[in-house]
Image (cartoon, rainbow, N blue to C red):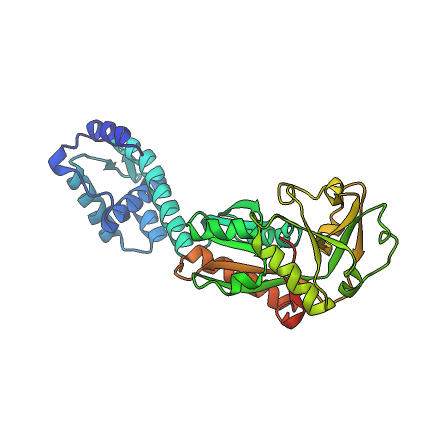
Length: 342
């Protein structure tokens, strides 16, 4: 009920400002609920039975309500009860008031439990296919929880997280993120990796490949100005699992959208990009071929959040992802995990 509606209602039932009841108190809402039950039953005995209170107590509550607003709401007769015109008006409006109150209290409780509200989540551009099943399952379990999703490179998302623009980030687990004092991170998803090449590449016909076999290839990464952590991750992965220093190509367009085969052409050479097998299974653009990378390494996605954030909605996300991860047996990533893609 709006302020205008309430004012009109008070005039209709004859209330004066000094006698306005406190509709927000538990007692007044209880009186309204009692009155609505009587209005539905048109009989004090039956209404008292529905409310599990004595008939005298119900009569006293209705009398107190009538006294508080200064209006006769109902008239007793031999058959039961007849509503006055003001009583009919109150019964109609009271139902809406009680429903709105119940809805408000229920939503407040859900928000306090992290089961409703808005959750602002950043998702790494090449981790969408690995992450979206989990986010979809989260909203399926908690339909009143709205996810405001932002897709960008992991480094940019972490910057937005630090600025308070996001509640959490699901991005590739970079060594630089673990070292940040302002955030916490936890590995949530792992999956096999693939080398993504053009269909004309000499690697396109391979059934699988190891990181060590890529030592003579040009590896594509986002520009260091946009994603310095991606470059660190690629170099670390090649050193750890291949024993070599990679030749990298910083593609200016990478991170602006879905992987484009044209980006893999660099000064006449065929570059190699990296992705997770979930991205491959969802379908690659025409002209791209995925060559599975024999583990290790595995691609890992971490949940990142601010250390000082104790919001219920963040805790709900964290608990849900941990439950999903542990149920799937994806928690023990160990030294196989890498955050190489952006």
